[in-house]
Amino acid sequence: MAPPTSARIGIIGAGAAGLITAHTLLRDGFCNVEVLTRDETPGGVWAAERVYPGLSINNVHGKFRFSPLQMPPPANATATGGRLSGEDMTAYMESLLKIRPSGNHTDTWAVTEVENIIFDKLVLCTGGCSEPKIPEELAPERAKLAGSTRPVLHSSQFRAKLDDAIRAGGIDKILVVGGGKSAQDISAQLARRNIPVSMVLTTTDAVLATPIPYPAIIRKSKYIRLPPSMQFSTEIRILGSCRRFLHTSWLGATLVHALWTFLTWASFWVLAVPSNSPLRNAPSLFWTVRTNDEGTGSKDGFHALVNAEKIELIATSRAVGHAADGQSILLDHGRSVRAGAVILATGYTSSWDGIFDASEETMNDIGLGRHCVSESSITCRGDWSYTTLTKLSSTSFKDDQRAPSLYRGIIPAKNILRKNLAVNGAIFTTNNGYVFEVTAHWISSYFLGDGFLRLSSSTEEAVAWTDQNAAWLRKRYPDTLTYANESYSADVAFWSWPQLTDGLLADMQLPTMRSGGNVFTLPFKVIDLNEIKHFREERAAIRADSASSAH
Image (cartoon, rainbow, N blue to C red; front, side):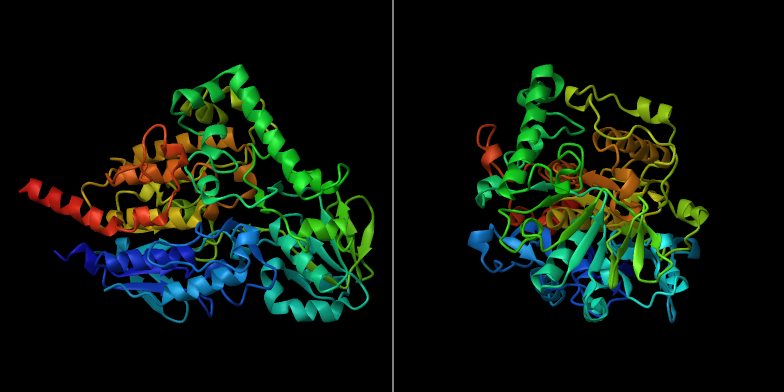
């Protein structure tokens, strides 16, 4: 029998998740690993062809890198608290690429482009921000039917078509549709170049800002990071008497929500957002994952430019189509707004639909499609009687809100026993580097068939896990599954990524809570990637012990 490491593995996607997965598999001895990408350069979202000046990310230095490669501090790190730009991420991904480590047809995959390539195993690392979601009524084709010749582009095309949009804008404003992070970054970049810009938005993202850059002990510790995620964010398992008090008593819940309310107020104060500004029409920090970390803010940042009236906000309005004059966009209140160019920051759809046959039947057969779970089934899967979750500020159960189908956010539950398909990069989290790297090791053990890896013993058990996790996500973040597509919402570990990664470590029978310390000092320990730097050696030792025990 051929060893597991002889399998031909295809990794689709050359972004952060794809690169660290390839690196991990190669170091584990897999000798036939190929990375497929449609991009000209590595980096995925951070590929050079997508990154434009002024693009920033919701991470600080040290929280979006991998243990094999250090990341140099960004410019002005002391003043900004280590805020990372798109250019920082591009340079890092290109450097990461340079690191080189010293069956039957029903269990193979065919990837078709110019040729057929047969793989024994496949890892999807395409993420959830690569396939533009464009409302049909705003599509470029509809603009042409209305007689418009102005550019209509998605935010993902901004870098490539920026100059065309500026030339077409002329004396008219460029109109940005949307209120999220991409819309804000694009509007700010245009405003910095003194280009007239307007934003059409109904709501915006929640925001975090602090008066001073916080040190690593706050930014990167397990429990007292700002926001105090593990203590004051309700999670699926409440451990410790302090956290049980906070999340299971009336007084504790009052304190928890008071803290999150204060953080919201303080963030608006730091960013000088007026009390009547539409930018305050944002979801609650406690209930949402649509949150932007602005650090200390900046003099030429989005909020400052709005305050300086360099960005016009057309608020509580929704763009509904192209006007018959070929020069304006129709709004839902009967108004229209003239625009020289239109940029649609309207989000993304699942990247998996473009890889596989997009039919619902095919996706369900593979085990990637979301599956329907009745309200009664979801309700009975978990009973989390937390007082912090009794007052929902979001929508109630929706019939079309289907559940993710990936066990641990990594393996299609119905495919778990075949060990030929995995996903990395589909977990919604705030520490992508740490989560992606731990996930890559989990996938490698899964493909190696490591006997020490704890898995569900049956398809039914794995599906039951996904249903219970879906029940939790529905309760904790009620609206997330309605707007986050399935290729980046297989699981949600927003503030709770240390808990999620500890669960994956426990699956691999590796030590958890690796930052060290005791019950008194653990909350103050900084989480560092060096603590997972030797996972390969640790897993190899467990594998060797298991083999010797078997004999």
